[in-house]
Structure formats: C-alpha cells, structure tokens
Amino acid sequence: MMNFAIVGCGFIAKKHATSIDNIEGAKLVAVCDKVPELMLPYVEQYGVKEYEDFETMLKIEDIDIVNICTPSGSHATLAELAAKYGKHVIVEKPIAMSSEQSTRIIQAARANDVKLAVVHPNRFRPVAIKLKAILEANLLGKISHALCIVNWNRGQEYYNQATWRGTKEFDGGVLMNQAIHNLDLLLWFLGKPSKVVSMEATRLREIEAEDVSTGIITFESGVLATVQASTTAYAKNFEESITIFGEKGTVKIGGTNALYFEYLDIEGINTEKLKEWKGIVKSDPWGTPGHEQIIKDMVQAIKENRSPAITGEDGLAVLNLVELFYESAKENRIITLA
Ligand SMILES: NC(=O)c1ccc[n+]([C@@H]2O[C@H](COP(=O)([O-])OP(=O)(O)OC[C@H]3O[C@@H](n4cnc5c(N)ncnc54)[C@H](O)[C@@H]3O)[C@@H](O)[C@H]2O)c1
Image 1 (cartoon, rainbow, N blue to C red):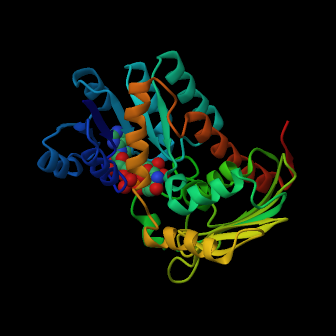
Image 2 (cartoon, rainbow, N blue to C red; image 1 turned 90 degrees about the vertical axis):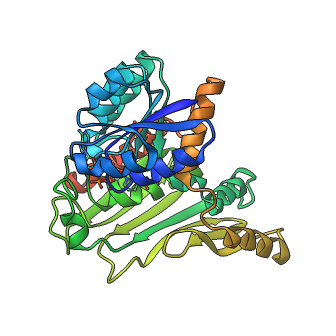
C-alpha cells in the first residue's frame, strides 16, 4: 500500500483525493492546509489526519507520496521540503514559477533519490494520445506549421476567489495557468523549440499578469507554431484547439476543451478508418481522468523503480517555454535559444 498526503485542500485537491481513492494499492492518509475548515471534508470522507503545518505532517506521518496542490508560487518550497523528508512528489502544474525554482525541485528529488511527477493531465486524453501516435507513425509527413488556440473565459470573480490568482509571483496569467497545458502538448507533439516571440496584454481583467497573449514558436525541426491564448472570451469558454498541418495531412483537435478530432484528413488513410478514429475518441472523450493516470503511474514508477510518465524535466521544459514568452513580450524581442 502506498500512503499519500495532499498539501493544499482547495479546488484541485478534490480530483487528487478522488483519484487516489480509485486506485488499488493507494491510500490517502493525511491532508494539510493553512485553513483548517478546508480539511474537514477529507477527514470526514476518508478518515485522514489533518495538519495545518506541512513540516509537522512530513515528520509525523508515514507518507510515501506527497501531492502538492497549493498556489503555483509555493510549489518549489513545499516540493523541496517533501523531497528532503524522503517523500516522492507529485506536483500540480506549473511545476513552479521560474526555471530556477523548478531546477531546485528537480535537484532536491535527485539528491534525495525520490521520484518527481508533474501534473499535465491533457497528455492522457484519448484525442491527444491518438494524435501523438499519428505523429510518431509519421502519417502527416513533413510538418509545415501548427496553430494552438485557447480562448477561454475566466471572469473577474474567478480571479477574486483568492489573492494569489492572477499575480506574477504565485499564478501568472493565461499562459502560465491555462495555456501551459497546450504548450506542453505542443512540446510533446513537436519537440524542442529554438526561437520564441510573443506579445501580451492585460485587457479585461483586473490582474497583474496577462489575460491575452499571442506568440510564435520556431521548433528545432523548423516547424512554426502560432499560439493565441486568452481568458477574456465572452461569456464562456469559446475554443481550445491544436491544428497540425503536414505535407500529407491536416489534423485539428478542438471543441471548447480540445477533446475531439474536429478535422482529420490524412493521405492514404481511408474515410472509414478516419471516421472510426473520430468515433472512438467521441465515445469517451475524457477517458480515465489524467489526474488518476498520473497518480497511478507514480505508484507503478515507484514499484518498478523507473521514471514517472511526466517528469520534472517535462515540467521544466514547458515552464521554461512560458518564461520565454514572458521574456520576449517584456523585452520586445525574438528570443533565440542556445
Ligand atoms: N492540472 C490541472 O488541471 C489544474 C487545475 C486547477 C489548478 N491546478 C493547479 O493546482 C494548484 C492549486 O490550484 P487550486 O485552484 O486548487 O487553488 P486553491 O486556491 O483552490 O487551493 C489552494 C489551497 O492551498 C492552501 N495553501 C496555500 N499555501 C499553503 C501552504 N503553505 N501550506 C498548506 N496549504 C496551503 C490554501 O489555503 C488553499 O486551500 C495551482 O498550482 C494550479 O495551477 C491544476
């Protein structure tokens, strides 16, 4: 049995607790939050111990894995501490708020010989898995370019829920919080970036960070990707999509949550086959929730002494890409990677 603890009992912690509960051989034993009443539902539902102080929980409880579900700007300090106490770490996205913080987490995990996984659950969506397989089989031939769009709605009331939201130190804007999922998919699909240029603005929300961003990535392969993201779409989520244009095919995954094949046309694959692929995805668009798969994978990774499916290095790579977008927008220049 693997014993889990959750730190940060807000919105996303519920998904972690439900996922742990669904996994054979996993047990939630403790939770930690600065706000005591937020821990009560977990105590009632799972019979866990509650702690207001993270280090006290790490000292007292027999924990194998800590799930970090606190504001993004606190991930580094908490993850480092958990690693120092010899606990494996599952950290919510973004891994941290800077490359420096992310590297500290990765080094702490290495130094203490614990495993580190970052929660980028969209990689486990059936449509993303299928698109990855299409690309790996080189069915689209040479890729020309890609288009990545996230036009979502997060109203002022969303940002007003907590003081950390929309701040540069603890949350970031649409790129760091929302579109990071899509940037992670772009890296997974298209490889390493070599150049980034970006512009951003804070148009409609009263927050410190950006609510609109547009940028271009050149990948090492030469593929060009345009990224356009916002939380200002009226009055609800409008579109989340990735389109990949290759010499032998065009694929768009889209909808309001990038869950479906919206367009699928590939040379040499007959209409019936393409329809079948679309249908399989449509019949179960979410699949097994990504959170559950990531947590389950961590249990297996420990048992098999292998790396988790989504590593600290994966988390750092996409965090670094977001940083480059910010740097380019701030300095008004194209960033070329060494
Ligand atoms: N992977 C996803 O799909 C996904 C979705 C939503 C949020 N997230 C990420 O999860 C994290 C949390 O987001 P949320 O929406 O649940 O936030 P939230 O504000 O609802 O919850 C955060 C909780 O952490 C607690 N907390 C803060 N500092 C603490 C500390 N030092 N010790 C103990 N408790 C502390 C707060 O009291 C609060 O209850 C963020 O990093 C966010 O980006 C990921």
